[in-house]
Image (cartoon, rainbow, N blue to C red; front, top):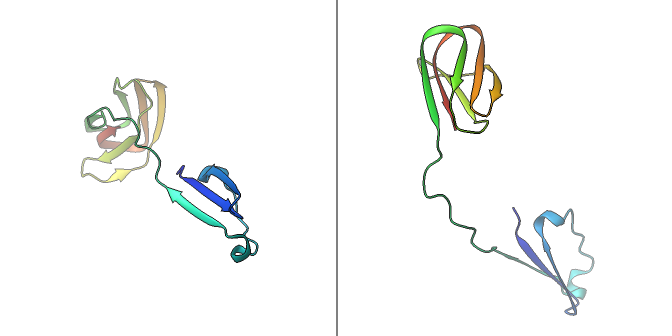
Amino acid sequence: MNEQVTIIEEVTRVAIVTAAEVRSVTVVEAAAVGVVAIAEQGPVGPPGTGGAATGFEQTFPSPALTWLVNHNLGKYPLVTVLTSGGAEVEAEIVHASLNQFTVYFAAPLAGRVRCL
């Protein structure tokens, strides 16, 4: 969150800071100095790509201890491993490159992998 906050002290000093710059605020005699804090929404960001996230899914119908996945997404994707029944499981994932990784299991498993 990077909201701008305007702080007015004694009506003579104005400081504009971002929320990320503020670690803590101590108000001393707020009524006497007239401290006012106003949070404003920032400008609209640039338009997106116009489409949903590109992903990849591969099914492994036969139980195996390892699955080799060539997704060709050009990045280290977020990986979800699912059993053939649809339950999410934990597995070791080792990326060989931006386009390939291997999934390692403790016991042979059939299912599918989803990449985002």
